Length: 308
Image 1 (cartoon, one colour):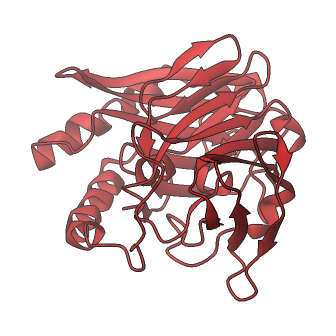
Image 2 (cartoon, rainbow, N blue to C red):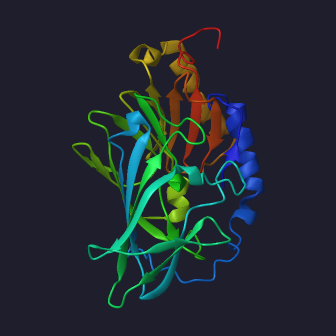
């Protein structure tokens, strides 16, 4: 469950309020998803693979490569329509460009549903167990999600999945190719980096979409709290390196946030928490609370200008 909160994440009161709302709606979050009657072919042992090539993220472009488990016959895959933090059917279809579908190296004809614009149909040939789907992701439509030095990845914008399945039963194996020398931050588990490529553990679709990723040319990671084998990390990304020169007293103040929240509630519902922060005048002001992270966006000098 995601809750839109007033930025910034630094105030313990804001965290407490978000946690209270999350607890209040937990029962609803665990309810069965409507129309989730199909058995997912993307299992934990045979997950859908998603390779997100973000090497052109500084130009506002990425390429999403998916290999989706299927069965022969009519198959429908869909683009996420109901969006975390927006709580409405606002999936940005304008993000999709140059889509291609193939199997075993041969192109397959696909068609868009005539009623549901988020659904796409393909006839899977006999003997085919996986199809490959690729499309170019337009990052800055309809809102700005990237600059030449920073980019935000909301996974619901870069994937398709099998129609009429429950998000907890659809499994993904995700990999990311970063622009050279860029850093990243996310709560998605199991990150293993080799060069500019990062591979993550297999995760259910609901966990994946609930774990946004920030990346950038200029970045800073600060451990704000640690204890009991867990930690809270500030992952900050900026359009200019000087905007990451946080004064020590500001960092010390944010280090009080987690002890205060734990003192209030006496427990936590996360393992490792990532406070994601982008500092840019081009990306809009925002704050969305996720399960084990928060997606925070603020002006370039938010952490260095005393007037903030």
